[in-house]
Length: 202
View (spheres, one colour):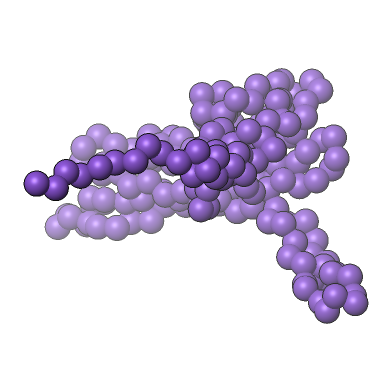
């Protein structure tokens, strides 16, 4: 009768596995293997974020207060960053401009009353490192790879552009939902999207 025999793990295999594990650890103590990252998703060289009240270019007064409050709540609840008051020193500043607030009717009933509608809120975001002046919310510039005899050069010079984030929320007036409650929900969703984009890498 044949018996299965299992050899003890080879020391060399164990050393190679440990070396691979350590190689996967980045300088920020995050483990990165095959494109996946284990560990904090936020950079550890930023500690504070200043969030001034967002500017509002729409006719919906008070929308800027709702969105600013939602963003601050989301930052404090989902990130390791501390939000500081306006005028206080900070590592970074998250500034925003509400550029659109609209309502779209999706469905009407037989009496031509609104049965279902949606609200849309769009905001331009600027997240800047106040220590270096770098616009963190802007995608990194690509570098063209030239022959080895020449140095890589940036592909064009692009001016600083805001990051446009848009959120929509559906509401049904027959269920007691209103445009105001829908816009508040859209602001909460928008805040979640904005803070989600503050994760590594930008």
